[in-house]
Image (cartoon, rainbow, N blue to C red; front, side, top):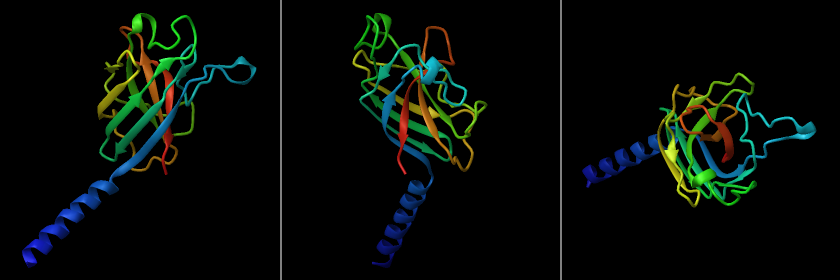
Length: 166
């Protein structure tokens, strides 16, 4: 009996430690509005926006203190141009995620794999990996951007941002 209680306590401790290592969580998202007042570009912490509006129907993301990231996105689609309702020209798109912790135009861009992941024709995508460079132990002002990657590029403009879950 004592052994079962000790095993259960250790299992609970391991689960609690795992739950406590979360750096940030994002639930929900909004697509990019490329311009703001006075027709200025809607640059976020040094990252330029996509050139046309995008929408996203759902996003869920977990970022751990060790730099691992898991992002599940649904319905990332163009909200303008002749390709409205698609994931871009020829219905092809790759995306990556960027975590920004500093509130400045020179914020450090902590990115997932620069090659990105493919977005399904219906706008769904899944990112699993590690951020490079590693995030700080405390990210006081986290922003998560989903960035579209044009063919042959690794930087990309932002198409959507995650809503921080506190």
